[in-house]
Length: 275
Image (cartoon, rainbow, N blue to C red):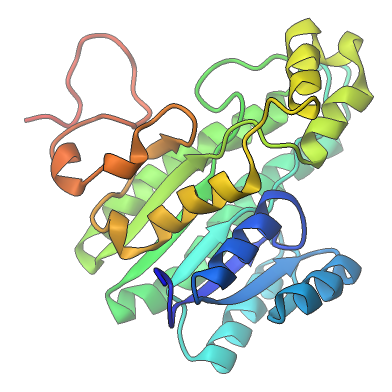
């Protein structure tokens, strides 16, 4: 078991990718604490997993502090943080969507990720070890019209990840951003429900393909996240990795030393990390 005796917090852990990761971690021997705003789903999922949970709004400082405190009081340590909580709405052009909805998406996806990192990191720094997995998404590295809130927040998560990885590199803490791939989740349902007129022909047709089975399974995503949460990925940090595109199983820290591979950079022929 790759995660035996490890303690993991998984936000957004009661449905979709977060739930799938929680299930995968359970099978690998981890003690998992799932967090979400939806208490009804949390209770149901925790019974399925036979694990702990805490209702948490990741946008709220006190909620995140409570989650970290609860985990430490229950399990005495935190080895892994998976920031899977996220929302994709609002969908539509910037001028047509509500400003409040746009702001909420940034708060959940970016501020929520930041807060969880901020309040988990002191324990990991003290312990001189830890793994943090943040989530990117569609539009993080390429334009994604009609999904500007989601795309903007996810691009910011990548830069946050890279910055934090540099801040804590001397404490044996690995922080990476993942793109899980085309997974059949509520986000796909939202795209289809919004209609081609709002999302555009390409987005709509891609969502239909996912619903028809051209998707990445939760099991494959779980395997990907386990790699980054386990000793298999020790020393790999500050990277953005794609489940479907990258040969992540073969990655080792030696391959990435002094390299800007899998980072957010301009493509202009300059070298940013290489000496």
